Image (cartoon, rainbow, N blue to C red; front, side, top):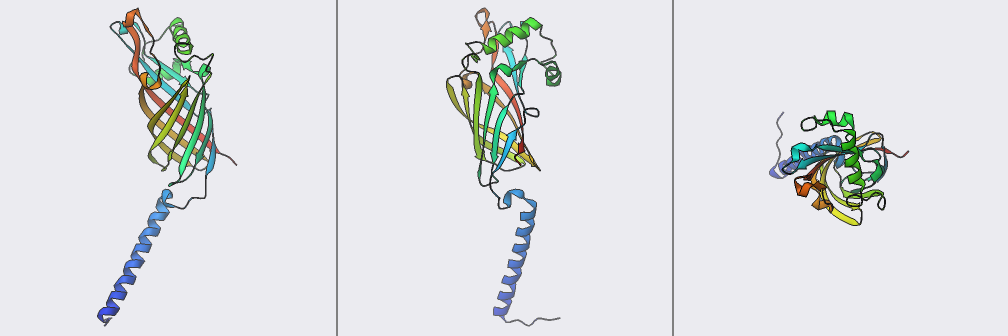
Length: 232
């Protein structure tokens, strides 16, 4: 069938066809990308401490480093709340970590850590590390029983996000920018972060003996997994 259209009618026809194609493509992308959908407001998630964990991998340094051990420090007592707002809104989180609940060298965690953690520290090594960590010179658990963390940033699901983080450790308020991946599955929100920080960044002085011949390494590796369940 032949359409005999004047130039004006041809222009109108092409314009309408273009708008139809554009609308179809937009609707398809809208259906595929949750972040493109209009949000229904903020959703609150409570942190599940049974499914959340912070891991800190602490190395050794100094000329006599072979006399020491690498340590893994874990905390499974994370509490707090996540206020998730679909992009382009700002999501926030407030977390609390009891300092006394940091565990030194959990056997299962050492096995999972792999290379560099094959050695088995003695009970006295573990107790000594625990005492040093909680001492007044480091985390000072007696006077500062909690570490508080505030997080905020624009959250895009299933992708890396950059968050503004404030850490309250002892008398210090430390500001950082950290990457984390955020995923949501029904009523569950998962956040995973992997990062490296120095003692200096946290205003902490690493433990050392023998004039620094054996000491804790300046850099520490962190793994954080948070799982939150939405409020009903």
